[in-house]
Image 1: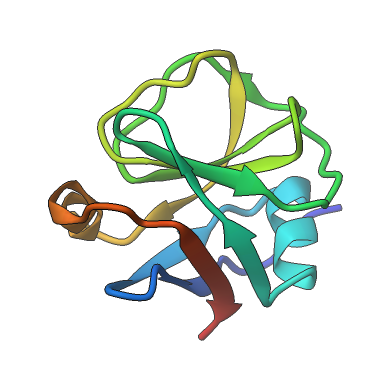
Image 2: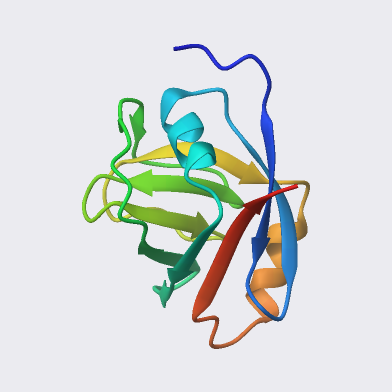
Amino acid sequence: MTIKNSKKIILDFGTIRLKGTLNNTESAQVLYENLPLEIDLVQWGNELYGETGIIMHGRNLVPKLEAGSIAYSLKGTYLCVFYGQQPAWPVEVVGKIDGSEWEKLKDEDALTMLRVYTI
């Protein structure tokens, strides 16, 4: 499956909202088709992650990524938001927070919920 256009999303953490763009991949398309999502978050260093209950393909796994990346982990069907942390195991990058807006996450404490929806 080829996705023709990138998809714009909002990551709403309650106290801040960030715009993001999903990649043109099958996993990103599966995520997009399951929006809106509400995810209970866990913080690990400069990473936030939570269970989606969505099984994506996880075909293009990478061990390192850029800050601001939105990724999917096959271990637990987690959606992960990285803002300075590298993954503990390879993940599939499904998108990116637009620009340098991800830096706002560094100033936030106790982010426990994420709503992801389309623009």
